[in-house]
Structures are given as structure tokens and as C-alpha cells.
Image (cartoon, rainbow, N blue to C red):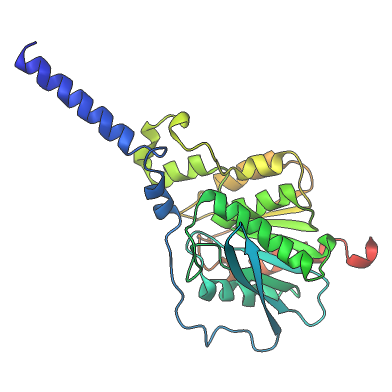
Length: 282
């Protein structure tokens, strides 16, 4: 074998090893860290709702983890929104959403996923889904009925809320700024991953579209038409996958953040929650 041929073979082998080593299947932990960075809260003093009863809740998730959440009780609400935050969520950011959601008249339950903010553990796709179900079960143990619960997921949390909806009963489901599937979204976030075929991604996928394709409660899908993080085409795909009993609201000029401060967001979510069957109608 000539020196040039050996060099070419070595270069090909090196490139192949790098390609394999950086693939999502092999370097899974690296991409999880990119997808779910731990963002710690700033001061919460000026964000706590002052006119609502606050009930701290501790609940188990998995075999060894304990998560902490809070119920913020609306004055006369029959509905409780379980809020599932996005990839950079923490308690401080959750409280911004709580204050906005309380304006709809509903009560709100919020929590941190495992490995988020100051919560113990390490985040993964599997842990997100497990924590999402554990939060729902904790709310049921507090005495709320499925007909009172509205699942609300934002961004990454939309996939979690959709998964919970496919496993547990609820009155309604809201998906805001969500992606249709994780493998498509992560390729949008990290374009170099487009060189990898589907089988090079981990077996455990996160597909919002699959979660809502078979069955879902009344569904509201919200997306800004200027979202630079998750393109609104994802919500259009979700609306198509969901089919009946689905409303898609595109918010003109809205991006990926601060959607909750918009009057058209408040109107859409308030009207949706008000349209859901009340506890007394069952």
C-alpha cells in the first residue's frame, strides 16, 4: 500500500470516527445539555403573586427523586392549569407565566423538572416525561378531578404536556410555541445534525405530533409568526396531525418569548378555558 493510499484511508477512518463520536446516539449527553441547560432563578421577591393563595407541594417522581411545585389558587376558578415550562425554564420564569395565567381566571400549578433550576437530578427526555406525569398525578392527589385540569405546555414543555395528555385525562390542552418532533427541531437548532440519518438518533424520541394524533381533549395551539426558535410550521403540522376539536391561533408579530404579555394571547387562552365544560356539567 502506498503512502498516499494509507494517508487517505487514515483520513477516511478518522472522519468516520469523528462522525460516529459526534452523533446524537453516541454523544447523547452533549446534546441533552444543549437542549436542556440548567438555568438558575434570579430573585423571586418581586414576582410572587400577592392576591392568590399559594400552596407548596412536594411529590415523588421516579424511584428516588422528589420534586417541588406550587398551586396558585384563583379566587373563584373551577379550572386548574398545569404549566409545563420550556428548555430554559426555572422558578422565576415560571412565576411570570403564573401571573399571566392567573389573569385567565384559572388556578395554576407549576413546578421544576428534574435537573432544572435548583432541582436535584439530571434532565433527560425520559425524566421530562416521567416528571410530567408525576406532576399530573400530584394534582389529582390534591383532590382535583380530570375535568378540572387544563394541560399547558410551552416550547419543549408542549411535547411534555402532549405526552401527559396521551396518558391521562384532562379537560383541555394548550400547546404554545411547540415543535412537532424533537429530531426535526434539534436539526433546526444544530444544522450540522442534518448529516445524520434517523437511526443515528436515540431510540427514545419526543414527538408532539404522535402524542396528539390518536386522541386529545379540546386543543388550542398558539404560535408567533416571527418565532426564530421554533418555526410556526411546527404548529401548522401539529394542527394537521390533531385534526378535529383543534384551534390554531397564529399571533402576528409574536416571537418565542414574552408571548404571555400580549392581549391577543390572554384573549385566546381565556376564551379557550371558558369554553371547556365545567365541573358541574359532568
